[in-house]
Image (cartoon, rainbow, N blue to C red):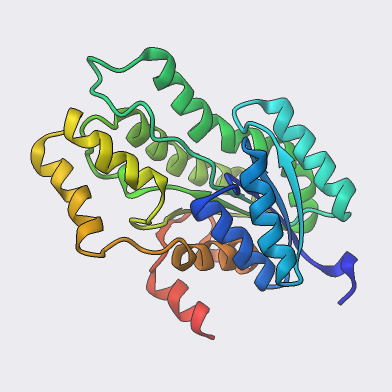
Length: 258
């Protein structure tokens, strides 16, 4: 397969955690990967991990909440690789972890900018190329879209909005395939924040739940959902477009075992 035949995927939030793991899995599956995040050092580490296994990666330092950054990332990715076949909208923020009454309004708005406007920004600029390639969009959602998490109102609202945006986009753009995915409870920095700050603002039983996830080894390593996200970015069937699904969906697990 020549370089021009290799599918290319943009992964946001690729400097650490789930985004980094997804990018590495994409490279293992044979894709070229454009890595976007705010942190240059973390992006360099992810790119190095991909290069070490013989993969192809390129980095772009930018903020998904800024439309112009997303537009430049898409343009430069196409300039770098000659094509764009999919995006994984993984970049996200939990903050503010506080009740509605006490939350910082600016932090609440920033949450929506990153978690909802961020995916829109990247999709909006990538759509012409994705439609031309009959490409794929994977929006990383959360169980918080459906579960009440006190003191995480912004995050819950944002992920619920992202799920419905996924459904609308699937209806509007039948040339592409778009899914929203619950990655499960993953051993990342976000879980550390919940354990560290949760007891200050959450009911005791809710804070204990997040603490117990770590204590009892019930957090998934990022590589597990990362593999599912990578497969979806490359091979999600069009019949799944518009779905909100879990990383351990039976149909997805069966596909991963083939």
